[in-house]
Image (cartoon, rainbow, N blue to C red):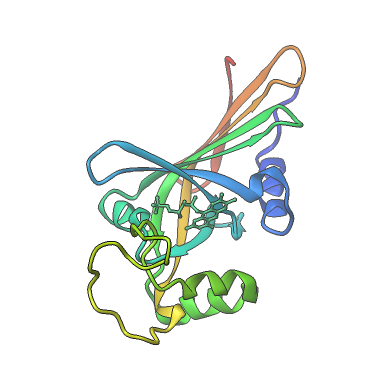
Length: 190
Ligand SMILES: Cc1cc2nc3c(=O)[nH]c(=O)nc-3n(C[C@H](O)[C@H](O)[C@H](O)COP(=O)(O)O)c2cc1C
């Protein structure tokens, strides 16, 4: 059976930025600040074939931002139960800090998404039934601008690994970034 081409895999990711296909939700793994692995779901927002990078957005106060700041190596996973396939990605995450770039990203998103950044307390803050923090927080600006909490993250991929268990023989292949910025594909034993 032929390997899926790099472009075909990329097409899959690109489509997922615009539709509720399985790769629209990716599991992002980071190294926690204590060294233990941490994994959570994020929405794939952009896929740049030329740069070989994927982007998602998060709240600047969320633990994953500090984790990426400390160790930018990340893995991403997409599992498609209907197709019986898995796409396993790894690369280096960078936090977009430049205001104009952040603003352009912000403006590309729908109001429903932007409203998530109005949350007054940092993600993971322990709260009571009244929604108020259980512990005293640092005083915050009463009308802090949600944009100030908006953190786009871009992952520059170094590996894309595809596993297809839908037919016999099972198919597994790896695309690795080469020194000249291209991609080299190899078939792997499943
Ligand atoms: C379907 C789904 C989509 C999610 N998308 C995002 C996202 O795009 N960005 C994000 O920061 N958190 C997203 N979350 C929440 C995260 O999985 C996680 O709970 C939260 O970001 C806190 O993660 P952290 O404590 O590791 O920083 C999503 C959760 C679900 C269930």
